[in-house]
Image (cartoon, rainbow, N blue to C red):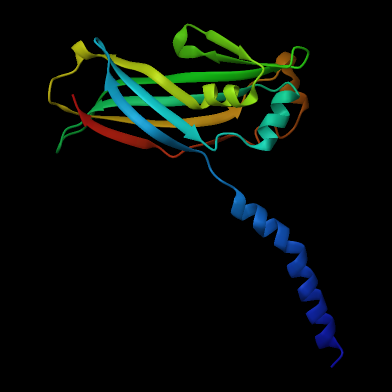
Length: 191
C-alpha cells in the first residue's frame, strides 16, 4: 500500500520536471519564407522575399563570440510543361553573411549577389532585416523568357554558421548544432 503514494509522488515530480521542456519545445518556431513577390524591371525578372524566424538566441550569442552567420538562398527557375519534364533555366545561390566586430560593436552584412557589397550597422534589428530579405534579386533577363509561357521559381534558405577563422572549427565540437533550412517554396507564374 505504501508503494502507491511513493509512485504518485515520483510521477508528480517527473511531470513538474518535464513541464519546462515541453513548453520550450512548443515555443520552437521554424524559419519560413514569406512575402514572396516575382516581378520585372525593364530588363530582368526579379524576386523579393523575406525569411521569418531566421534567428535564435544561440545564433546571436555565437555571432557575438566571433562565428559568422550565413544565409544561403537556393533559387531555381524552370519552364514548366504540363505533361513533359520541366526545363531548368537558372539554378543559382545568393549568400548573405553577417559578422560582428566586438571592438566596434558593429554588424557587417555581405551580399554575394551585389559584388560582395557590404553594409555595416550597430543596430542588430537592422542587421537581421538585411540578412532575411531578398530585395530584387535578378533571376534572368526578360529576353530569355517566352511570353505567356508557364514558369516556376523553386527556392529555399539554408541558415548555418560560417567557417571559423584559422581552423578553429576543428577545435570546437558541435559547430553545426543550429544549421537548418526552410522547406522548398514554389511560385508559379506566366511571363
